[in-house]
Amino acid sequence: MKIASKEVSAVSLVKEAFEKAKKYEDKHIFVSLNEENAIARAKEIDERIARGENVGRLAGVPYALKDNFLSKEGNTTASSLMLEPFHSPIDSTTVKKLEAEGAIMIGRTNMDSFAHGSSTENSYFGPTKNSIDDERVSGGSSGGSAVAVALDIVEFATGTDTGGSIRQPASFNGVYGLKPTYGTISRYGVVAMASSTDCVGFFTKTPDDMDLLMSICAGQDKTDMTTLPDYYNETPETEVKRIGIIKDFDNDAVDKNIRDALAKKVEFLENKGYEIVELEMPTLKYALAVYYIIVPAEISSNLSRHDGIRYGYRSKNAKDLGEIFSKSRNEGFMSENKRRIMVGNFVLSSGFYDAYYLKAQKARTKIIEEYNKAFEKVDFILMPVSPSPAFKLGEKVNDPVSMYLEDVMSVPTNLAGVPSLAVPAGKTKSGLPLGLQVVGPRRSDKNILKFAKVLEEDE
Ligand code: GLN
Image 1 (spheres, rainbow, N blue to C red):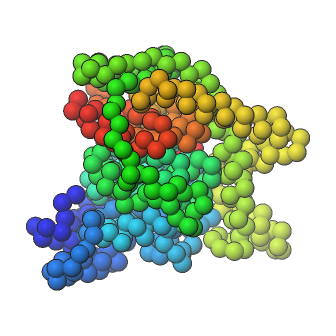
Image 2 (image 1 turned 135 degrees about the horizontal axis):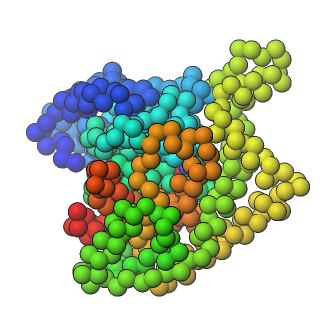
Image 3 (image 1 turned 90 degrees about the vertical axis):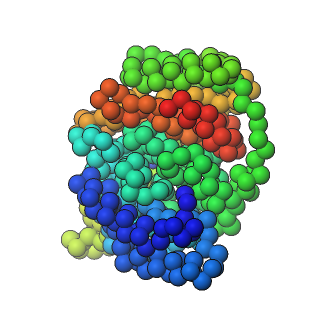
């Protein structure tokens, strides 16, 4: 990100970003553009540069904001009707930090409504198309953000990852996507999905850009009690020697292109002198089932605040208070949101709590232990992000279970709270991007990014 050197003005950069955004209008990347405000901010930054003022590390850099980050600019809708009329009175901590460094938000990106999904097909505004193939999905839930970066409209975009929503769209579009260690970046001002797994992260074109964003946004925030003290900028450099690959996932359920991409990277690493260690992680296969109990439970609780009274959408057909709640929620939520609310209430209900929710929490502990053990044997794990490259629009939309299966390799890290970076790993013959993920122990985010630079040499 080379800005502020006066070679190129912030205004021209921002205008260029809008030109590109409009050129790709058919991809349906943005749910709203922030043109007037963005150009005004760019002018201000150019003036400050001309006066020789210190303008920050992201001065004039255009970025895209996932539609579930609150910001005073425009409406934050989480791509749902429920919040479609919602104008936020506050900026999320991430927006504040990025803008304090001079970044300029050019628009809000499309996502699955309330981040429930893996393709953006659950968006109230309709899906985002894949960056290179109009018939395929962008991935999700942060599909718009991934495509905005892949098509070079912006330098970076924000995302949230509850069970893969940054890494999967990143890999479907050939960019970097980081889900940091749980608690690294404040979630204050981000529409909550599942509070015990939600993470804020980014999409970038290089590991170095990711590092810069992390160094700006990581750190404790008194308005988010789950944030960790800033370990990121204090991370000691570790030597990486042993890379784990998980035997349990090496099977026919994974697309051959992805298995080949993994094998190619493994060979490259072996040639560079890394030791490759085969790991058995048998509990990981339960992660998907555990995720789809714990996450809906948290969703049902987090979405209870959307009642048609306090903010957001209110049904016009309601005759009394009861109907305001029920009709607003029925009309405002998408069917996937409602499915999760129902599953969540079911697994938390008194007769089923022990059998489902409590059992899932116990299995979650086992998953955490399995990662702890794995990281005694290896420094990082290299594995696929998802079982296939970008699938066709409409292919899974009527089959929630096959859509959920998409998340089988991305959710374990969220349950364990460990960091994971999606890295580009070549393409299929027809040009579809492939991705792998580097998973590390808690607080190893910075070293993962360093390691990603080694993998980058093999492009
Ligand atoms: N695809 C996963 C889900 O539908 C993950 C979503 C996310 O990370 N926000 O739950």
